Image (cartoon, rainbow, N blue to C red; front, side, top):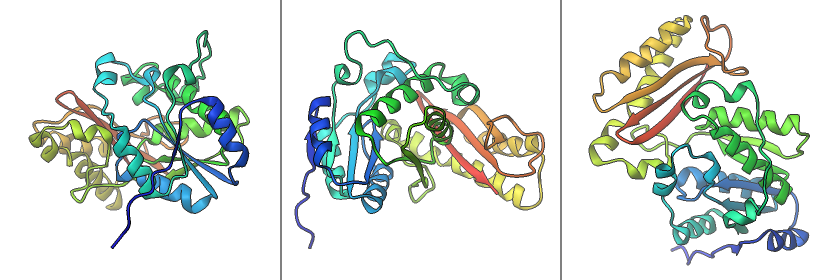
Length: 284
C-alpha cells in the first residue's frame, strides 16, 4: 500500500527561486506548465525526475498566450491538486509565480520566432506564440535548466522553442516527450475537462482522422492533398466536430506538402462547441 504523497516545496518569487537554485543539485530538469495538470504533465515530470538530479515544475497561466480573455478566464485552476500531481510524479520544487513576478512593472520585451510561428496555430491564434516564446525564455533564464520538457502534442510549439533556444544561444536542451492518450485515443489536454459528455464522446475523431491518413500513407499514398482530404473526410463524419485546419506539412518548415518524400507532420485543430482541441502524428 502506497504512503501519503509528499508535496514538493513551493516557491513564488524570483528571489526565492534564485536562492533555491544555489543549492539545487545539477543537472536541473524543468517542466513549464499552466497548471490543470493531468497524466500527460505527470509523464513529463517523471521524465525530468529520471533524467536529472533536480526536477522543477512551473505553474503559471500565461495571459500573453491567450487570444481570448474568456478563454483565459475559463482556464481551469486547482493548485492543491496540481501540487499533489507534482509530488506524486517526483518534483522537487514548484515555482508558482504571480503575473508581476514574470512580467514586472515596466516590462516591454517580447520574443518572436519568425516564419515557424506563422502557419497552422499562428493563423488561428495571432500572437499566441509570441506569448509562449516570451514566457519560456523568461523561465529558462530564471531556472537556468539543463533540460526542459514539452509534449509532442504541441508539435509546432516544440519546433518553435527549439528554434528559439538555438537562435538565442540558450543552453537548455528542449526535450520532446510522447503524446499521452486516453484509452479511446483522445490526446490528454487540460481543455478536455471543458467538454460536455456528447462532445467528449465525439472528440476521439481527431485520432481516428490521423490514423486514417497514416493508414493511407502506409498503403503507399504520398500526395499531401489526398492525405489532408482523408483527414477532412473522416472529421466530416462527426457532426459535433468543426475543423479549423487540417495539415500535412514539412516537419522542418511547417509548409504544406504537395508530395511526401520524407518526414511529415499531420496535424489539425478542431472545435467542439467552444472547446478547441489539437492533435498530430508524425510520418513515417
